[in-house]
Amino acid sequence: MDTEEFFLPRSRAANERLHALVPGGAHTYAKGDDQYPENLAPVISHGRGAHVWDVDGNRYIEYGSGLRSVSLGHAHPRVNEAVRRELDRGTNFVRPSVMELEAAERFLATVPTAEMVKFTKNGSDATTAAVRLARAVTGRPRVAICGDHPFFSVDDWFIGTTPMSAGIPAATTELTVAFPYGDLAATEELLTRYEDEVACLILEPAGHTEPPPGYLTGLRELADRHGCVLIFDEMITGFRWSEAGAQGLYGVVPDLSTFGKALGNGFAVSALAGRRELMERGGLRHSGDRVFLLSTTHGAETHSLAAAMAVQATYAEEGITARLHALGERLAAGVREAAAGMGVADHVLVRGRASNLVFATLDENGRPSQPYRTLFLRRLLAGGVLAPSFVVSSALDDADIDHTVDVVAQACAVYRKALDAADPTPWLGGRPVKPVFRRLA
Image 1 (cartoon, rainbow, N blue to C red):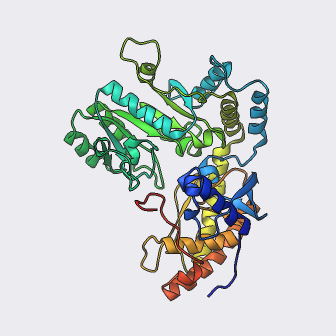
Image 2: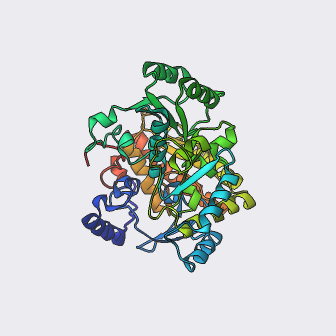
């Protein structure tokens, strides 16, 4: 048994205090301490670039920063300077700021497949607004979600389809149906079964695998033929696939799309964008029924819009998307080599586009395993790597990647021992991590 110990006493105490005051101990379920090995959930003090420090004073190389939102690294100087400039000028007024005009112009120049945009604070508000708009313009009640994608919104139309459906009426959930990614025939069958009932198809245009050839074009054609709205959730693919998102990379134009995460480099800003004909239904220059599209007190705070503009400028001028891909390719190659060297290449897998890597941990029978994930995370943490995924930020450098690969190799050595024993329990240090979406706490 590996006897090396790693303690986080101050983080452990802070987690206890958080649970006493905040349901779940965090404001995002994916950041909960149940996602980390027992008593090894660091509470962060601060971050800079690709590194964060916990309240115990440990420094980590961080991946998946801010749930993929901090793609330029923490406290990015160009973004921070843009934010500071607006803070001294006021952040929220009784009428639109000129910053709202400038930010809209910048966004639509970055994502030229959209004709209008409306900003808000979080992704859920944007996706729910897209669904509401689709229902309004089609007069149809059903929402078709891609069942292979893990998250679209905190709102009832989506959460009711997950194991955490407590508090959501069944009548609401029954209006949401699912289609499989990459399968046009199954999607057409769904649209035919619910002919003239489906308001929209909503999906992430790409995920851990590339879209099959012709798939997105075929989906566009299906939506047109059946009279429903095609919505691309570009929260993750926006900027990481290209500055104009997956729609810019693959050349398929949705009716509506939603952006967030990387858009603000950690500042709260997201966007609903799309065709003028649809978007204007949420405005004042049409003769139809008004759609309550998006209306939030803080949706257009000037400092967040300034952050978004600085992010877009940085991506364009510094070739950030290409850098993310290069870093991810180096990391993926190193991790695969380390896993192969320790004889666990069939058990520790790296998947996804280079700019959006995740890892899978499989047991001795080749099945996804939370206990083996726990073992792996525990060894990464002990080596100074905080990695719920391997999603890179542009602040990483080659030394960070090399150190990460070294730590992964050490973790894989322990992984091999557990596989040989056909039991990871001695290396877990407590209960295994748990999936976010589950019925019971």
